[in-house]
Image (cartoon, rainbow, N blue to C red; front, top):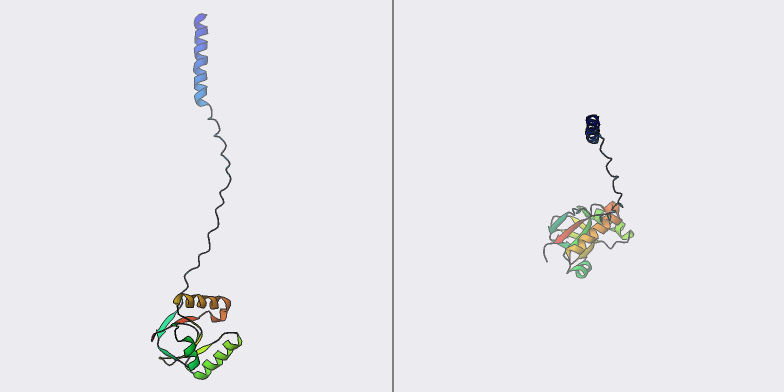
Length: 149
């Protein structure tokens, strides 16, 4: 009987070991809940804006405009016309909108309508972008660089 008892104990131990191997694994621990990381939104980056630039010699239509702007090299242009009457008509429209337009007679025969001029290119570029933003009808404003200074 003792042998039977030992045999039963041995079988029980083996069964327990085998049952331990066959048991389903314990459930994995629940994932930790973390506070979501809120990243600061990226600053909007303005895409570089392509501003057309032309470098040429020109004369001022009026001498007083030349005197007032003689040191400036960078001119913001809103219109360019072959026919003087068309340039003057456009100049009048700009006057009515609060601009102070000046007609420049280019070496290529065009009448360029400038609304601002600057000594520094960065200032002129800033003004072109400002006009494009505030006056969508002048989305094609561009920059004229005086060659003869």
